[in-house]
Amino acid sequence: MPADANPSGDIFGGWLMGLMDLAAGNAAGRRGRGRFATIAVEGMKFHMPVLVGDEVSIFAEVVSVGRTSMRIEVEAWRRERSEEEMCLVTEGVFTFVAIDENRKPRPVPPL
Image 1 (tube, helix red, strand yellow):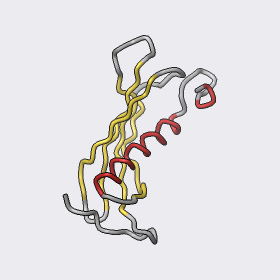
Image 2: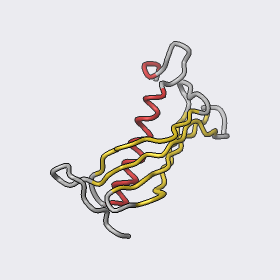
Image 3: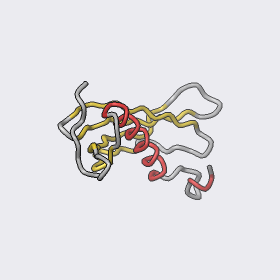
Image 4: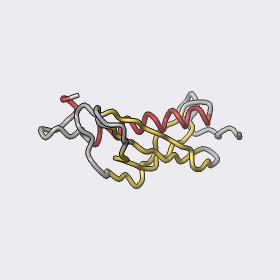
């Protein structure tokens, strides 16, 4: 939406990064069966802008699991409304730690 963009019509990187964090959090919660907190974001790369009106698809994949944490690779792709081709626009690695009801680290359940 226009409120999420700069005067040139490019979507704010922080808005896109927030969606990527949500996608990574969903992947962490499914794999770890519970609550997780973001503790780090590495290697964010913004390859090209997302424009107002573009469709954005976000894909997240768990790439490693430790005792209480996991790393998740996330990609954001854009598609112009009138096109079929999708383009990679942003990627990064999000690290999450599993937390219990007291917000203390807890073990990630085995597969």
